[in-house]
Amino acid sequence: MSDVTPSSAAAARVVKAASRATFFRQSGWMMLATIIGGILMWSVHLLSRAIPAAEYGTLITLFAVINLIPTIPLQMVFTQQTALALATGGEARLAGLLRWTGMALLGAWLLGALVVAGGHGAIAGNWHLDNPAALPVLLGVIFLSLIWPVFAGLMQGRQNFLWLGWGSILNGAGRIGAAVVIVFCWHGYATGIMVAVAAGLLLACGAGAWQTRSLWRARAGTFDHAIVFGQGLPLMLGFAATQFLFSADTAFVNAYFGAERTAPYGAAGTLSRALLWLVMPLAGVLFPKIVHSHATAEKSGLLQVSLLITGGLAGLGFLGLWLLGPWLVLIFPADYRPATLAVLPWYAGAMIPLALGNLLVNDLLARSRFRVVPALMVVAVAYGLAISRWHTTPTMVLQLLGGFNLLLLGVCVWFVRHDKK
Image 1 (tube, rainbow, N blue to C red):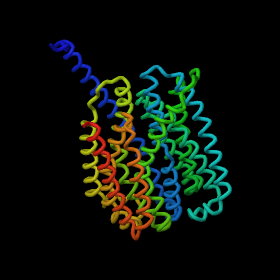
Image 2 (image 1 turned 135 degrees about the horizontal axis):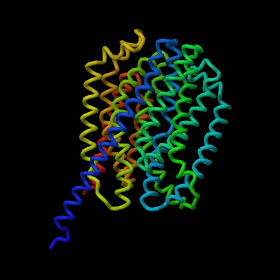
Image 3 (image 1 turned 45 degrees about the vertical axis):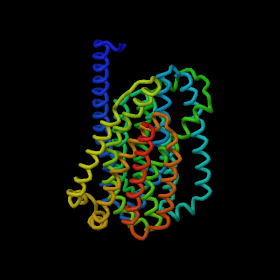
Image 4 (image 1 turned 135 degrees about the vertical axis):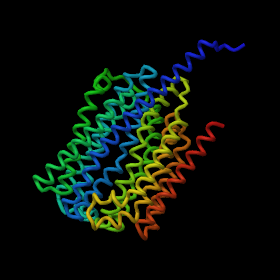
């Protein structure tokens, strides 16, 4: 005879329905906040009309450097640790980890700053930087870019999606507001816009610090370094591999084709990556819920729904860029438009398998299925080697990106199917 009574089964259905309703409400807010924040941050590119093409190419290069910072891996590590701590009563352990991580990040940043100071001339020449203040400003942005994902991970892990979304909006509002003043009032170019990026990050970090003060101000306890690193290192490497596929192409294009050809390529990338930023909130909401359900041996059943929504939205976004591309590129200077239109379909198409693969990576890593990590790293390394060998045209770079994103998706599908078996 079954131990499940009709009343308990009905209660379970009610709880499951409420969980899904909460998921869709939180996902809806995060998608809205991401769209608003993304538009605000993306609006900086409208200033390309007010600065020289070479300066805009330099700005794209600096953005590409920032995109290579492991912000997403760092955020997901703290998302996982926060969700796990709250599910198992380990808040003191989390506070100890936060203090240790803060000192480690500061030390790593200082070491990197010394390296940059020593090779300032070579770096500036390789990146075509005319303003000597560009690298110090970039270092400041990098420091804030390392701090923000810690606060974002704490908010995401405790499922405070309201202020996680507002952090994104504040980041974008501060960026575009300061950039408009710097460009039109003080006649700043790429370096000035990077100062505006720092201003937006300061606003976001301030909001995040206030919302998570109960976690980082708590009495610090001891934590098992072996366990934390055993969980954190695979998370860092797995999400770093995904982020490399998401952002490394622009840096390669700048190195091989120069700043002026990078500008239209970066414009296409800005439009195309909007597809990923549109659907990434689903994975962001899903991740802490899977961590919590895995720690408490519950079932969520949200992955299939998330895959359907992600695939549908990414497909519609691709069609939108394909059909509306000739009108969307009008926001960029006229000399960018032909080259931007030439690569836009390839760029947008490459983002679809990456969006689906990113969702599956979130599912696997949230359930501590770390056997996928070496395969993800092999895909990322092979992608970098392939671009370094075959890069005749920017279109070829995007064809390689699309092919390796498909490979990433195939690897993730195989591991998910194997895990179920």
